Length: 234
Image (cartoon, rainbow, N blue to C red):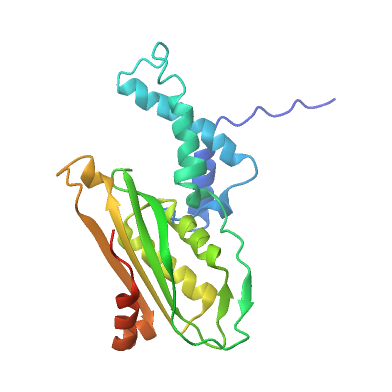
């Protein structure tokens, strides 16, 4: 006698993913990447779940999404935006980065930037939009990566709910691991729309911060040279 197929699980896919993370003792803060814990098809299922729950948010905001032609598809659009665009760095694997040996033994200052970056404040989910610069002091053991790959790695890190201070620390850690330079510097300048749009409504203030590693931290002259070469003008 053939047994009937078991009924499909009614457990939300977010709970299944969360359980895997907890069992693996892995952190899943807003700015963490959790792609390793997503199984095939689950990102699409998450999109459906987020859409359903965001419909509930719109209902609680007393918005008539059935009659209002402007918001009939808003829940779907927001779910897709979060999962596949503005927060894709949480759910997508790291971009492929081709690495080349430092065949010519380059050991002079390299600067990449400005790289335009877009993120979102993890406190209010308002945009953070700015630019960053990367300084590198390679050595004979360093891996060299293509210019566009710095932008791809920065986008992957920034495309998560973030605070700026932690974002550039994450990027610095990633680049130190990938490139293995003697020194690394990351400087970021950004507008925070949680200040523009709400609260004090100040649209002039920017945040500028830096992370220095290795020779940039120890060598005052190198740090001064790097900072003097940045074009921080609007």
